[in-house]
Length: 140
Ligand code: 5GP
Ligand code: ZN
Image 1 (tube, rainbow, N blue to C red):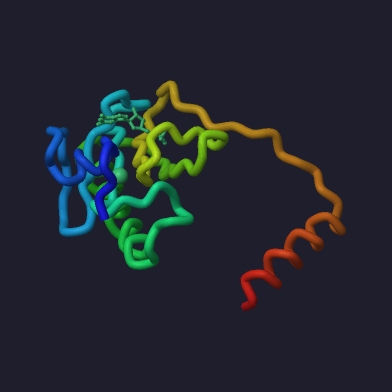
Image 2: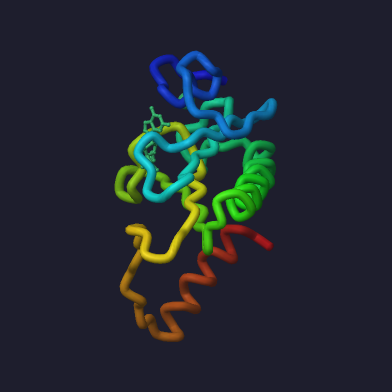
């Protein structure tokens, strides 16, 4: 449920003060202390899960509903012109706090946020092979 020495568990439980913008029985949404843009918020499940692999399906299914609520509120109140939802898993992917959280990032003209990657050029065969592996594993 709650992990000792996890700062986001303590914030989610209200043991450490935060700028809470939304709370329900499963999640607390707070302003990021070091925002990438005006209004940058993070949604924290109240039950500890380090990452998406550990996240219970119930929280997984509910967290995007919260994200939508926050996103709509930001559009209305902050007049952001765009918005990104971001969720990092693992150090390699940029995760720095190992309690799952969803970033809700309002975007503005001339903000300093950037996500970029080089687009690959895999062959049809390479794409087919990857799709086959995942499709077989997921067993649709
Ligand atoms: P990650 O890099 O793990 O995806 O994101 C961690 C985020 O949590 C960062 O954007 C960082 O600024 C934010 N953060 C880290 N510690 C605190 C804290 O104590 N309070 C708040 N409000 N945000 C935090
Ligand atoms: Zn935690």
